[in-house]
Image 1 (spheres, helix red, strand yellow):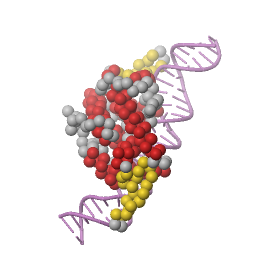
Image 2 (tube, helix red, strand yellow):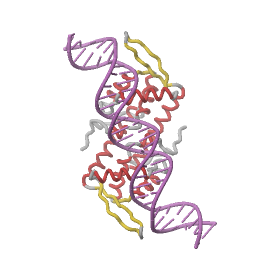
Image 3 (tube, chains in turn brown, orange, green, purple):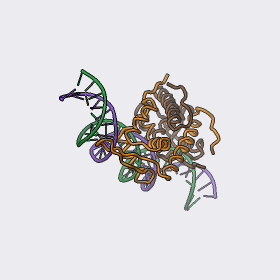
Length: 119
Length: 119
DNA sequence: TTGAATACATAAGAATCTAATGTATATTTG
DNA sequence: CAAATATACATTAGATTCTTATGTATTCAA
């Protein structure tokens, strides 16, 4: 019996943007460190986003116009909150749809279940 | 409405080994070019494995003892058939289980459906 | 007061893929 | 029958994305 404590990084690759965009869609706004902790808790430690992976991704999404930021000071410590732009919301929806479609195709390919109708 | 002709390469990354190992598990033996064509047909062109991605992966899996090969000549043209070793079969099963588990976690995380019991 | 947690950031290197290129044989089509 | 397409292997430069490590600084708990 196969028990998985944490997914291979290989498997998670490429889903980081999808996860981040969707979390921001649900939560409204979040800051980086908060995202890493939220994902860790929600996935029972199976997906652990490192800061070295997250921050460059957030910066890239912001540069690309999907996210906008506002800084807040908690005492002397700065916190950078991210929220979706209109374009970011579109991208979030597209990414989740694409992932859902992809999973459907993969399940068919891996013979896990018959293909559902999503042509 | 979101229509997807082909998944972003980002999303597919990391699933190549899983796909290859599982196909070989189902088919017994296949050669490289055959794998690319089979995946293309089975996924209705949504996943297209390039040879530049496939051959290095096959070589790595062979080097790692997951696959073994036999050459066959079709006329003058060589064909390299791959099949799973015992270890490769184990890996294939693990990879598919891991993917299935991962999808379950992702669906919960993306709020697509409640988490199923696979702790 | 010292270690852990919070919170940001970057950077070198690894892994994996894309796109291009190369070689050669076989088949189809005009 | 010549030319284009398909079959079948392979490698390589470059891009992307991630891991691991490091750096800075504040806040909180022991």
